[in-house]
Image (cartoon, rainbow, N blue to C red; front, top):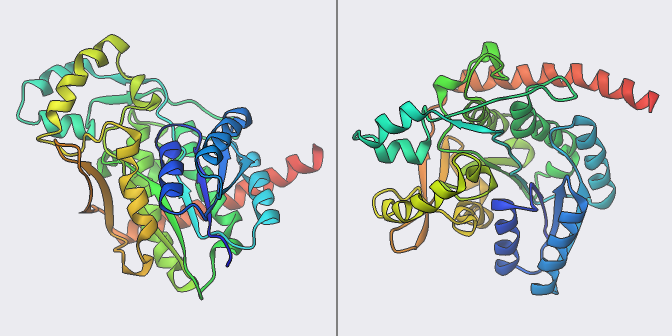
Length: 335
């Protein structure tokens, strides 16, 4: 019996880390491959997972999704090791030095929209994006484009019509159509690159299903809800989080988006692991939710996506990929 192989990006902290533990608790015959930037951190995670699940197999591949050369090399390594991948969790993500729009925050607290505002961070968070060594906006490359190149590199391991493979993206309730434009897919001109990259993820998800379902590859998007990880802790000074936590626990009775812990946030990721991918709706985002009393559940939300835009975006990415390949090949010959 071949072990199922699961590759997870961003597996050494936050939701990715919680996902690893939860998947092995469901099925310790898995082979988990952790794709991480930091090898020593990944090694510690691997040791901890094997200590609690000795019959599992856990391996590590070095990969930084904000660096295309690193993605291509990591993918080569994965192709050497495995014949196929059953699951690819595209979970690594960044929200660089988020700034809180204080005016929006205080207006929001005293408005009817307070719960919506907290659970989607709509209009609340802006980020300072920077340019990577590859010449891309960092949020776009890390959250979306690096992952797209990874999928393209791993296509031979993912496309088997006899037994479908699943791509599972960590998206966000914060993915807003108004923050994305085909004219500026990297969101270089805007203030909310995180939201833009997550809407781009939702678009790509639709296009991937349209182009790959018949080859036995299926894609889904989920949202972990509001989880306290190093992504969120940067938004406010620590003492304010300390003051807000009781409020957040209280808000959970009204807004089930406050999953709070990475374990709860991973709920929809684990749920998707058990689904027959053919039975999922590609236009649905699966949301992790936690009731006020702490029960986890998953609910579907129809996405605000136009299939033509999705297809155009996909073609734009393929064009971008062509340009990138030329550059990567050149730098390989020199180094």
